[in-house]
Amino acid sequence: MAFNQFIQSLDLSNNEALKVRALLQSKVTDSLEQVATSSTGQNVALASSISKIVFRENIGWIGPESETYIATCEANWSATCHLNPSCIIQPADKHDVAKALRIITTLKVPFAIRSGGHNPNRGWASAGENAILIDMNRICDVVLSQNKKTVEIGPGNRWQKVYETLDGSGVSVIGGRTGDVGIGGLILGGGFPSFSSEYGLACDNVRAFEVVLSDSSIVNASRTENPDLFWALKGGGSNFGIVTKFTYWTVPIDKIWFAARIYEPSVNGQILKAIEEWQKAAENESRGSIIHHIGHKRTLLGWIYSSPVEFPPLFEMFYDIPYESSFVESTIGTILDFTKSTSNRVLGTPQKLRRDAFGITTRPSADFYTLAYDRWRQVTDELYEQTGCDMGMVVQPLTTSAMKIGRENGGNALNTAVEPQQWMSYLAQWVKEDDDERVQRAVFELRDYLRETAVQMDILLPFVFMNNATFAQDPLTGYGAQHIARMKEVSRKYDAEQVFQTLQGDGFLLRKV
Image 1 (cartoon, helix red, strand yellow):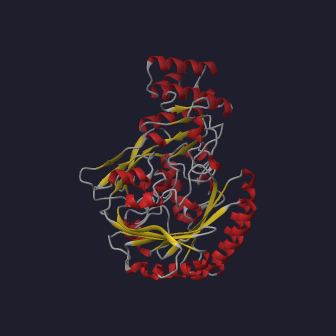
Image 2 (cartoon, one colour):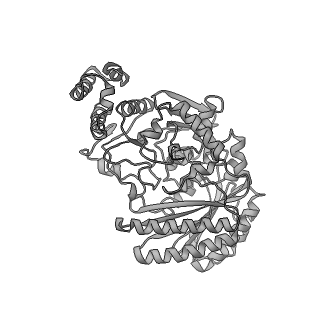
Image 3 (cartoon, helix red, strand yellow):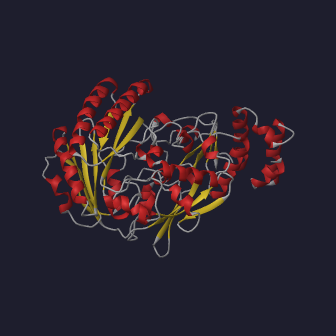
């Protein structure tokens, strides 16, 4: 590509164009192809300097010398992801994203994309010194349509802002269960919401995606426009492009009921048996879901119901289990009220701890839950004593209905079994970097034990929920050979140069499958 063509594609003022030209000519005199063969470090430095002109410091560009650099680097939820990129680009709209990709692809620069930064895997939504981070934080509009059927959501939002915008409108969306989680990663990974039995997963509620492709073109993907890309984005992760807008179906949910209690460890066996009983009941009653988290010292159990009915019979198997205290009192309120009552209190204070997680999918089994709990207790007690690490255990049930809805709404990439199941997850949280290896070794050993046990019990399902997976897991393989082949075909069609496989630093990428 000639200098003129590249500079024109950035839509600069005359003065800015002259500055970019001078930077390019200081490196080479011939063509951009010559620049692209330079070392990665040289290209990253050049791309960062050009980006500073294009996006402007302290507006859409942040570098190591910027006042907000450290705070922006540490916006990721897990301290394991607090890396220091060459620069951070914060695009204001889809056209800025297209310019950022033009710079990155022309100069062959490694990059990462961050929506909310909640993924705890190092390098997934964070970038080191020889890479550029595209931070979607400024693309944060939430616009409800006039007929209230859809809402347009920018990827820089967190779910709390979405719920705040919709509160009082009489409608809501099927999104994150805690308000401090970001939009993009949750939806592109599938998204485990409340009310999945009624409305499916988060990704199943997208009407359309607006996407910037690797060649900087901007396309829409829906059931009628680029339907293959639409299908792949629903659970396919960051393999195909950068989503700049999610057009989301609303749901007619206003007032709901919710409550949560704190329990001592002595009743965990009762709770796990009750969860299996609840999963059977939930096959015939779609309006509720549970919140479950076993911590080192206490257990959280909560219920959320999509109608304003206090203590509905759906959860009756839990009500008589002795509890220590109320975490959230019985409340008739909105989804916003619910997320306000749980955010941070469930997931932990942002930006303070190092974190790692993993997931496993099985058919419902109280016997398996008990075996998993017993081994988890053994591992976590030892780990807590050695490192202070608090590893949580969560059983996340899903019904047959939740799995069917995705297929009825145009399908998705996940290929989950259409049967009752649970997406068990474990989250380790600790303080010291020196303990990373010890914690991760314990995480991997527990994961392997659970997998082997589930195989022996003939209840293991191949699907691994991407949003809960650790870097050492391979969730895409669990989608099955046919879905992987179809996703790779979509990738080659919409990313001919395979930018998202070769320049994107890390993630659950098709190049690894």
